[in-house]
Image 1 (spheres, rainbow, N blue to C red):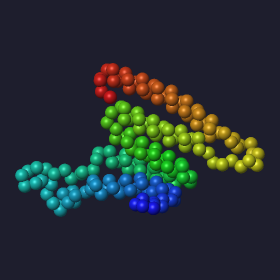
Image 2: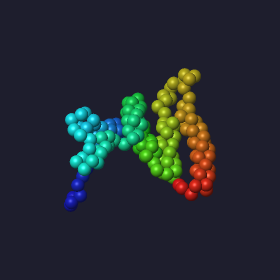
Image 3: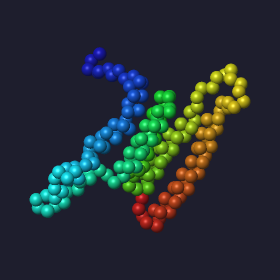
Image 4: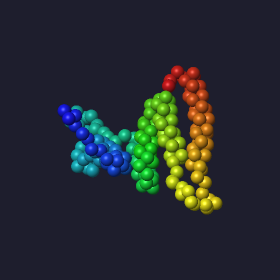
Length: 175
């Protein structure tokens, strides 16, 4: 065998981590950016000995949007049961999070397209239809049809968005 180590990674572990990752992100942001300090609770002075005022809120200004995104992702993930859909939702969550924190139009567009791809595949995923079901309401290719319509609509909207991003770039020179 040599020096190569074998890693036993089961799909259940990945499934568990993908459901837990948004909550771990929330916990990490709470630990990294404490919301309250002694000065806000009235236990200390909010200025140093040389008169410099200490900021008591170290948390970023868009924490409410991030918190709402994390809560919505966790709630939506609970309704999906298949492994592929949970991973696609996790990738869409990462795209949304990066899109919220993008600094220019190029990174915004790339994050939007990554999120768009995830939703396109999720739209195409459909539950298994039994071959023996002859009910009038079941259409076995409804997910594929919806996915193709979504692809065409998103291609058109992406083209319009790129046109206006290029128009902004011509006017301002800023990406």
